[in-house]
Every structure is written in structure tokens, then in C-alpha cells.
Amino acid sequence: MVALIGILLHSGAKGSTVWKYGIGGFLAFAISMALGFIGHIPPLFGVGGTLILLFFLGILWLWAKERMAQKDAFTTAADLRLIGYVFMLIAAWYICGMASQPFLKALEGEAPTSPIHIIILLVLGWLFLFLSHYKSRKQ
Image (cartoon, rainbow, N blue to C red; front, top):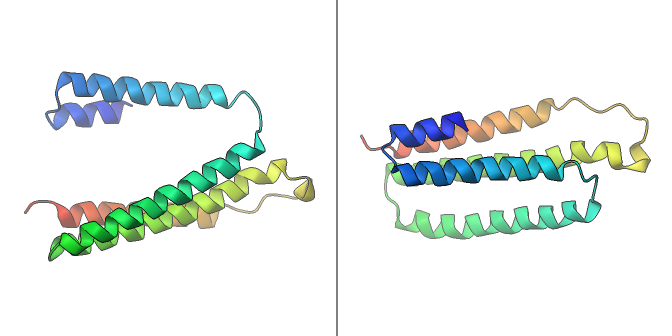
């Protein structure tokens, strides 16, 4: 939250924008923490996974339209951004799988596997998103 507010102030955002995103971010965090105390709700994961997939397909649709209008370095930046999104989607898939293990009776008593593949996917996703922003910056 401090980084979000700091970067908004540094970029010259209006005070109302800083307050709006600051309060919105805090509320999203507080609600997610409060929902964590209501217990495990399996259908929520099916709905959430479906929404993630639909949002990703929407990103693909918008990305394809945006890329057709881009030229030179911006095309490369768009490609890097898509690669980052794909790594993030795959990481989300594995995170959900690992997080669900304690709730599956079939895996009861088994030791969890190392999440090294998840951190690798997340690092690659963030790397490609960083590179896309680096490539698309104004020279």
C-alpha cells in the first residue's frame, strides 16, 4: 500500500486519485482477509478459476487487437507482456493446486511437494512484464 501511494504521488497523480486507489486497495485487502476466516468453500474455487480463465481470454482478445495496431518496439513490448501473462496464468494454476491439497481427502497425510516450480513461473512472469514495460518506455 505504501509503494502504491508513493508511486502515485511520485507520478504526479491528483490527491483524489491517490485517496481513491489507497482506500480501494485497503478495502480489497481487508475484505480478502475477512473472507479467509469463513472457511473453505469448494464451489468458490470453480467460479474463481472460470473467471480467471475468462479474464485471460479477454486479455488475449484485447492483446491481439492492440498488437495489430503497434509498430516496432511496441510490438515486442506487447509480445513480452503476453509471455508474462502466460507465466502468471500457469503459476496461478499450480498455486491453486498446491493450496487445495490440504482440503482433498485423497491426499490426506501426504507431504506437500516443493513449490520451486511456482516461484520460477512467478519470477519469469514478473521478468517478462518488467521487460515489456522497459521496452515500451519513451526514449
